[in-house]
Each structure stands twice: as structure tokens, then as C-alpha cells.
Amino acid sequence: MRVLVTGGTGFIGSFLVDRLLADGHGVCVLDNLDPRVHPGSRPEHLAPGAELLVGDVRDRERCTAALDGVDAVVHAAAAVGVAQSLYRVEHFVDVNIRGTATVLEGLLARRDRRPKLVVLSSMTGYGEGLYRRRSDGRLLRVDVRSEVEIRRSGWEPVCPETGEPLAPMPTPEESALLARNVYALTKRYQEEVVLPHGLGGNAPAR
Image (cartoon, rainbow, N blue to C red; front, side):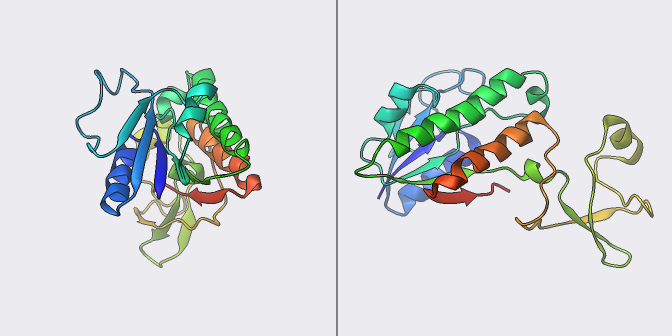
């Protein structure tokens, strides 16, 4: 199988490329090589067996070319950074939502051979996630805290009732979404834009 990984030079994407190659698949990577992250040409950590196409997922022509001959697409390309998303709102919305829409339209236009699509989500859509109170085992969802609250109680969430430290637990996918920043919202909208088209599914990135 030939797989296109958008954002394949990124942290998660590059590990996925390694795994796909190890499993015997052909891999093509579409990445814009953002100079703030990749100061140079092809990153050394990108597996030599992967074909690299330098381009932006928002570029319809480049995206269409990258889709040629692939059987599946893993869409990992995204502008990342919770704090940065709060003041670079237009950029995050443009890259994460319009970029996803461009990939999606490129797939939908291929009526003869339509590859499957997997979109990498983000745990930020669940806010602080699920925790367990150590004293009695009760499961709790913790609201997103302000900077003042974090400075007062520390980085790790505490029980709002007892003040005791909480133990992190796996957050089920069916949990209510609590996106509270631009990055989390755009990752959530990526899922919601793609799911109605039935091209494969989404895989949360933990």
C-alpha cells in the first residue's frame, strides 16, 4: 500500500512514517518544512525511504499532485501550539481548517480511486481530560484552569472539592469535548469536517 502522510516531518508524523516503512508500505510525505521548525532542506530524522514533496496542504495544485497513486492518506499537517494559537488566530484557522478542506476536496475529486483518510486529532479537545481522586477512586473532569489558578495550585490539577492531587486516567473518546483554545477548536473542526464524508475515520493523538 502507498500512503501519503501530510506533515510527515513533524514529531508524530515522522514516527508514523518510520512505522509504515517498517511494515513494508510505500510512503510519500507532503510537508511545507516550516523554517521555524526545519531550518534547511530535508530533515535528517526523516527516514531515507520516504519520498518528500515540499509544499503546503493549502496549495490545491501541490496537494492534488501528492495524492496521485496513493491508497491512503494520514493527515497530520497542522499549525501547532496552544499559546501561539491565541494570538495567531487567522493562521491556525487557515492552516488547520482550510488545509484539511483542501485535502478533503482533493480526495473527493478522485471518483475512480478514492484513498482512505485518517485525520490525527488532539487530546486538547478534551480539555484537562479525566482524573481519579486518590482518596475514594471517584472519576472527575477538571475544568480548564486560568493562569492564576495554575500558579496557586500548581501545574497538576487538584480536586476542586478536597484540594487533593488527582491521578490522570485515560480519557474515553466518548467523553464530552471541552475545547477552550483556538488550537483545540481547529483540531476538533478538522474531525467534524471530515467525518460526514465516510472516507475512513479519525485517530486521536494522545
